[in-house]
Each structure stands twice: as structure tokens, then as C-alpha cells.
Amino acid sequence: MSEKDDMSANLENDTQSGDAAQSAEAREITEETAHADADVAKLAADLEDLRQTLLRRQADFDNYRKRIEKERAEDAKRATARVIEGLIPVIDGFEHALAAHREAEYENYRKGFELIYKQLLDHVKRLGVERIEPAGMPFDPHLHQAMDRTETTEHPDGTILQVFQPGYVFHGRVLRPAMVRVAVHPGTASKKSAN
Image (cartoon, rainbow, N blue to C red; front, top):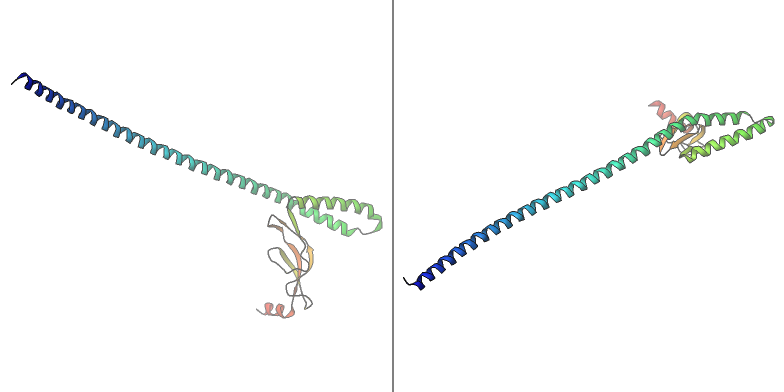
């Protein structure tokens, strides 16, 4: 073999070993890149999981906050309703006292009493109470309590003829139904008692 051939062979061997080294290095880089891509994908998935967890926690907290606010509002309404229920007999007492003293010597006394009564009613109304004065209206068992009935054909069946005691409603809740006298047609009353 000549020197030239040796050099060619050496060069070829060097090229092959260089190619092998480059090939091994390329494989190593490819493996590292694949490993890095897998790590990035895992981190991205972890980040998305954390983001979703954060969104769920925020939604849970918002729901909790809204529920607590609603419960507080309902508690406040219940407390106010208890206070108003305690004031209703006081209002009734004022009405009875005002009705009892119609004589002239009680006029100044009556004016002061009426003023206090009006202030009390205004305050209760500002708290959200509605007074039920159903005279002439149809009977509603959700708002009225029939204390008496009168057989008559002068009024439609079920019409409220007289209010014995007004009722009170607070935010849709009946605190006390109105105590009423109801008109009943004679034929209807006999049919009901026959059944």
C-alpha cells in the first residue's frame, strides 16, 4: 500500500469516525431536545392544571361570598320581622285607644296619640311592611283569616265585608293575616253544610 492509499484510508476512517461521532452527538442532541420538549409539555400541563384550580377556587369563593351575603340579608329580614311582629300589638293598642276616646275633652290627648301612632306606622312602612286592609276585596286564604261569614246576595260570593283586624306583610311574608268577615251566598253555604 502506498502512502497515498494509507492517507486515503485514514481519511476515510477519520471521516467515518467523525460521522459516527457527529451521528452520536446528533442523537444525543435529539434525545435532549425530546427530553426538554417533554419537560416543557409537562410544565405546560402543570401550569394549565394550576390555572384551572385557581379558576375553580375563585368561583367557589365568589359563590361562598354570595351565599353569605344572601344569608346575612335573610337574617336581617328575619330580625326585622321579629321586631315588627312585636310592634303590631302596639299599633293595635293605639287604634283601640284612638277609637275609645271620641269625646271633646280628650281632643288634645287624642291629637298627641294620633301623632305618635302616625310616626309608628310610617316607621314600620319604611322598614318594608305593608298593611292589609282588604274590605271589598275577594277573600284570599293566604292573606286573610275568615272570622265570620254572612249570608247575603248583595255582594259577590267570597267578598270581604268587614275587617276586624288589619293584616301585615313583610317582604312577601305574612306576619299576621287580616281578620275578616266574608260574604257567602245562601245557596253556597247550604251546599257546604250539606256535604
